[in-house]
Length: 116
Length: 110
Image 1 (tube, one colour):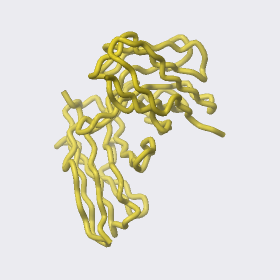
Image 2 (image 1 turned 90 degrees about the horizontal axis):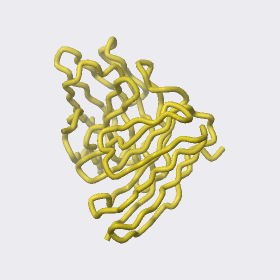
Image 3 (image 1 turned 60 degrees about the vertical axis):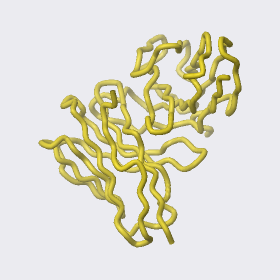
C-alpha cells in the first residue's frame, strides 16, 4: 500500500516555464488537497477536491490550476512559474470530506520546487 | 492573513521536561482542531486532535488543552524525549478546509 505518492521529488524551473506536480493515492480517498510549505508560513492550502470532477480554491490559489478526472489522481499545474512559487509542495488525502467530523489527512513526502 | 496563529516558532526543552506549544484562532466556525508532527524530509502526520465540545484530550504523553471562550488551544508533551524533536503544526478545520499554523520547531536536548 503506497499511500500518497508525489512526483517529482525535486524540480528546478526557470521563470515562465510550466510544469505539473503529480499526486496519486491508492486508498480510494474522496478528498485530496495541495499545500505549499514555506519557512515561517506553515502549510497553506492551494486547492482541494472533494471528489472526481469537483475542485475548489484554498488560501493561495493564484498561479496554480488543478483538475480531478479520477479518484486516484490530483495533479497541480503551474502555467508560468515565478520565483515566488519556490516552495515545498505537499499533496494530502482523506477518506471523506473534512466537514465537521474532521478526518486524518495523509500526506505525501513532498515535492521541492525551485524557480530561478 | 494567518487564520491560526502559533507560538513559539522554535522551542528547546531538556529531556524529561514539558513542551508547550500554543495556538489561537478567530474564526468561531472552526469545528475540529488537530495537531500534526513533521520530521525532516517527510510529510506531516496526525498526532492528536480535539473537537470544541471537549476541553482536554490526552493520548499517552500528548495532551491538547482547549479553551473555547478564549479561542485558544495548546499541545503539551510530557516527559519530552529526543525522538520528539520535530516540527509541530496546529490546525483548524471549517467545512472542507484545514488551515495550519506557522509551525514550531521543537528540539529536545538529551
